[in-house]
Length: 355
Image (cartoon, rainbow, N blue to C red):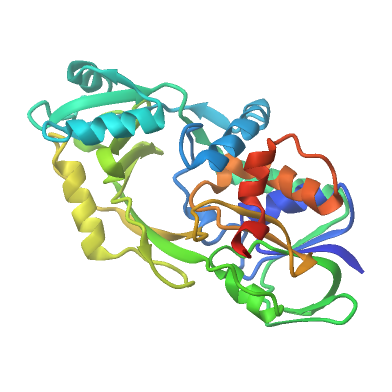
């Protein structure tokens, strides 16, 4: 009998599995051939402690020491820029993200392709970091295996029943005392299979494109560039730039792909602020970020059945919150005291969505 059967092999499922493997036998089921195939494998991979709603920022702060001590973070920095006619929006975003205003000249010294004719305001943060997302997922998987657990690919869940314990039918039948629903955009489908009321998860598409380094610049040390109102971002990646229109278009659970028109509009917004045009797109893709109705994570046992446990609605914050989110989930499951403040815990539990 499996103690904790986890459905989903992205960062939510793997981090939860690693924590719970200290308390019982864990098996992780991943529908695809590889871990993190969908959203986790298509992440912007940035840690910014001041990004997200209040409960997310609490998780960010509680995750930082773990991320740093395990060597998952490396310096990147964040540079927000706005046009001359966007002063009010700039000031609002600066306050929300806790950024320091800098001169346009200083911004251009950091990113020499910025256009002084169109960039009117700039603000920066030196604490934003890249996250080594692949190593992080693999490390959590290693913890599960080291504690006697299994991480199984090609296990698409087809049926879930309960008669004293859970029976989950995938590539084979699994019997478990508890099910952890970490299926990303598919969490409501998994809940419905299990006879648990869905929580109203909304998958939203985000498209991305990889372009060559502009004018053969060495972009390695450039910060992530963010347009005001989160209208676009550009991030160095392996000597090139990843550019995203930052859309959050509602969709359905599927293997997402970029919308060509939305991507073109995002690239145009990026081009408005730089001196080098985009001449070639080397690759494009999309991921699905999943949101609860109130925009924050859903962590812990469902009030309808405490043996059905949610690790859902990461909303694009999955990697930067994973250490603290998974620890909170494990604490709630085993009845341990959480180090997270009570207001944040209440804001994250499934009960809030059942009222």
